[in-house]
Image 1 (cartoon, helix red, strand yellow):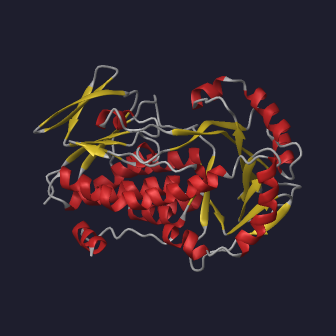
Image 2 (cartoon, one colour):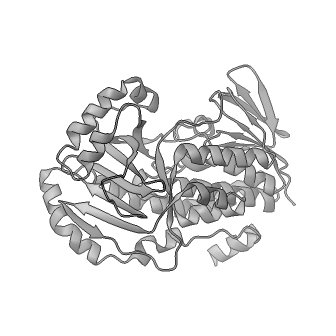
Image 3 (cartoon, one colour):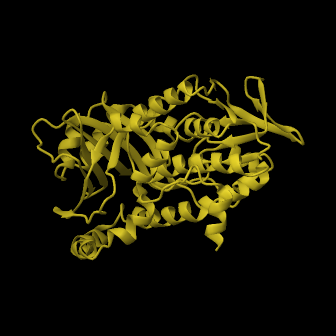
Length: 403
């Protein structure tokens, strides 16, 4: 029987609320501490949740809530050199769900609160103390909190990651800054339930239709200088709108998207990152979950889904194993191979987003052949068909994985 009864969860974005809700389902009391002054709304633009991520949300009772606010994506296309290529699809797999990140944050937060999870705000973690009885978190406002374990769900700039090991690597800048906007689809006539990955003449972008006759589009703007979310948002939105219009001017339909994007509807998400493999996922009574430990680039389409999966698997391990050390080791053993495999695939895709003139011309010639020979089951099957057996003992899964 588990000796873990209480948990501190640092971070209230996506992984934090799901982790706390899953822990509560597992019989462990969890409280979320968020550095922002309130729920983390207003961060980011759109994202896609893969079938495996939505299935993990079903375990904590949030799957249907997300389906209600999301738009299905049943088809994917690639646009290269002016050619539209239809990408092979998996059979008998639910559609991707395109959702506004603000809506996702709000829904997961409210669901956690309804499940009985307490949240505290303006709580920026600065240090911890550990002893044989538990761990105490110290916050910048002078307050403290004590529990059996502390879980770092504090994102790609994780404080907890540095407390576990100061030598743990930080995120790598991809050389691109992210932007997004919601625009009208009145006269563009884009097909429903379709997401398009477009390699423009100067930069990559993607777009898809959402319910309510809208288009959600995202731009990956090459930018040599690293700018955090705060730094990017400190620059007037009008400046970024002008840059986007210049960058995508020759692209169809990217140029029209940029022209319809205004300072009022632009979402600036700052530097795009990818996490290199993190050597130490846990130490003592601290452990990492979500983007704090595995953040594949947005090219993967799996970042949020992997974070949700890890939140649920961590709760299972703490539920089923006798102490936190055994639980953390089992959790890493179950998750590391999967998340690093997805990150490696995304890293390859990411390199193709900023090709030079010669590479861009080669892509136009070779991509149709590559897509024609693509085996979707081999490429995406294991990722999207993954399901967590909540009721099965973790020990049983560990035994099967080592057999």
